[in-house]
Length: 78
Length: 149
Image (cartoon, rainbow over all chains, first blue to last red; front, side, top):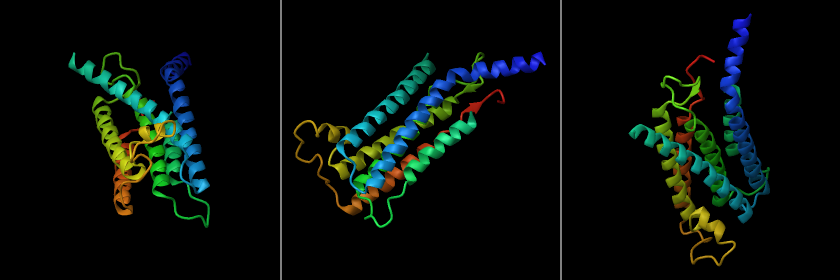
């Protein structure tokens, strides 16, 4: 019984640091979905404000990927 | 965990498949571009979460980790899709989207905001972007578990 609880605790300990990440991605995807749905439903071209929101989110996401891949490359070269 | 990620992936795909209201005119190239950019941004967000994980295979690797080879391929796919997007933006918006957004606040340049390609060239660019974004989506695995979670 205690071994089972220890295994559960280990799994929770592994996943806990990821929960903010998962919540963050969920919020981003939801915002993107809402933004895309608004544009499609309006039947008009996206506004500058909608483009600005999207470009900001995109730049932020790209920065995270580039930072992580740069970090991986520098670790590999050590 | 996997269910959460699958759900997020499904939402990103749904964002790309939202339908215009019945009877409305077909979406413009700008709207199509916006949709694919939103899908791309969702995919990049998921890619960022994956490539930010600690690497598998290290002695102290956690159960949820990244495969370095997959992370490298994701990086290349992101770069490839980004390049295709910038080309499509220039053909459809008249300039890269960052510059297009800035042009609302400052006097626009001669071409920014004015499409510089005909419909066929724009459609070809959109098709290329969609293919590149699909390739990126397929490069992102559901988070690997080295410990059998």
